[in-house]
Length: 504
Image (cartoon, rainbow, N blue to C red; front, top):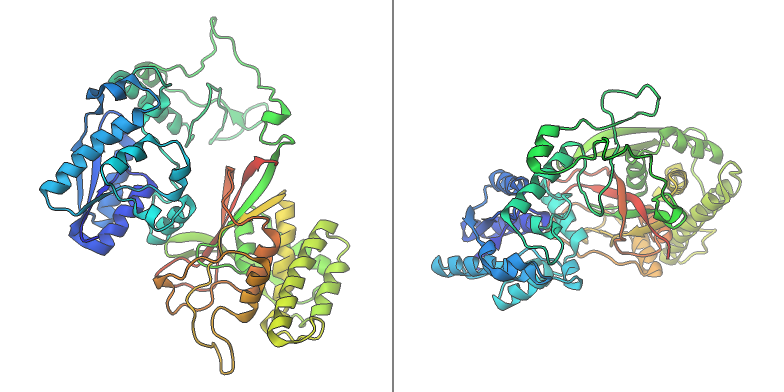
């Protein structure tokens, strides 16, 4: 593209596209935010903040979709009329100011949904660069994180009219009431609100209740609620106080149909210590890792954790000192795991599988029997600590199912030492080839950084992950594990998403 107008709403997709276009085209990229009653003020604020941070060529226009009967009628085609209004104006602007293209922030995940707005985009010849690049939502978020876009983890925010049931006319008054109500809920600490009406209890920031539950009713701004025209569920004569809801097991996040799930996202590489750091960052107690090491009977191991930054991304680094520990052969490592009676059978089985994948890969590289290979870096106790610590940690956090993103290997490079191999390490490639795991494409910003995914990291992820895709999750927490590299171009981190999804 020689020049482009970007439809810039203030969400992560359009923010990433606007920043990328600005980096590539400078002033020949124009990010345009359309103001209408359906755009929440907070989204406009996000758009303006990012534009200021990155020095975008940013412009605000006004659209009037409420003058279109099809939009006001609020049929399932509502988005078509809204986007038609937007693209009419953007196309006219691009033509008047000689911009070659108009582009939106659609990604490949949008293609499988019911999106009437995509029809309007096709009719106006709108480009979707992230669709053209084959990027899904997870990759969009990862790229935004790498570029330092603060909206990288912003939840999807459809326009305010999406809250109104089909068939109910869209009015300015209803949109304002919706925005005011959602602002109140966000002030109570709720990032997203979906589904039927509910009664919310939130943790009290100031302490515990007298009954010791630690749950206090949220402070309610009754005047603001009255102005917004919404009810906050205040008990009264006509509205008796609600009992604590008794949810059926199938409806509960903790019921038998919900499964604690982990998604491993290799943002800037993967290694055993990065996985361990992500678990610690997600809340795994350090003492739990130490207990696993003690169960193995490894002397001379010191384990600590530290908070570190990588490209303005905070994370936890697992610090494993094995300088005083003995070296291990493959057989000794397997025997140590088998003899760790304090560990569960599940942990011993998964750890053994990861170690066997590692040893089999080394054997294929060197043409030896797995029991006879001589391990260099992998022969330290650090390998054993990482493998067992990660597997045991996932079990202690209750994780039953693991998914992973494609592995990030980095730029193929020269040997790290005379007689050595280039990046990726041969064992890493053998592990990936044996498992059939997908690999992310090489990126220009990986140049000169060297190894990003280690054999231990590859062995753990390919052994633990049942599928390489982003699952549908009710997300609870994120853990960020920090690696030992600190390149200026991207964060050397691995993210662990923890949440729940449904059993198959």
